[in-house]
Amino acid sequence: MRTRCVVVLLTALLAYSLLEAADRNVEPIVSRIHREAIDSSAIRTVGYSRRLHALEIEFHDGLIYRYENVPLPVYHGLVSSESKARFYNQHIRGRYHCVRVKPARQPRAFLARCSSASRPNITATLIQS
Image (cartoon, rainbow, N blue to C red; front, side):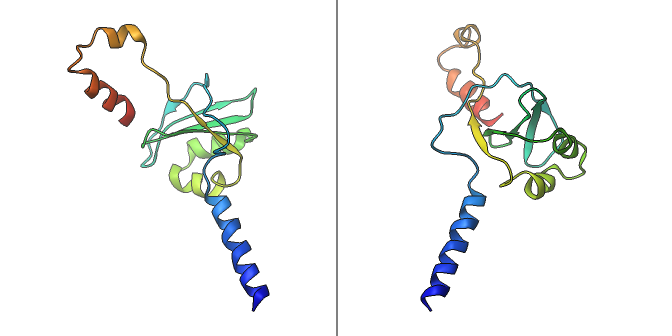
């Protein structure tokens, strides 16, 4: 009975670790990888660095993740797949170490041109997009 409980607990911990999206002990990084919009129900933009072997994915909820040590064929498979979300779930999620990426900030000059009444709407738009 005790062995079974340990096995169940270890299985649950393994499943949780695979579902964990990013290393929460690491601060979000700043990225210079160019991402392009793709047609997907879950993913907004995708970018790849050949030098770093890093894949970046921005989801529609605004969160951005960098997946490390991703082979180039995986990136090509993602952008050419019929279902990007399904490809991500089957071939990327839980298979590569990832870290959060800080979203790009709007230039100060752009925000300075906006009236104070419109700033909350701009911020909300930036967060949603």
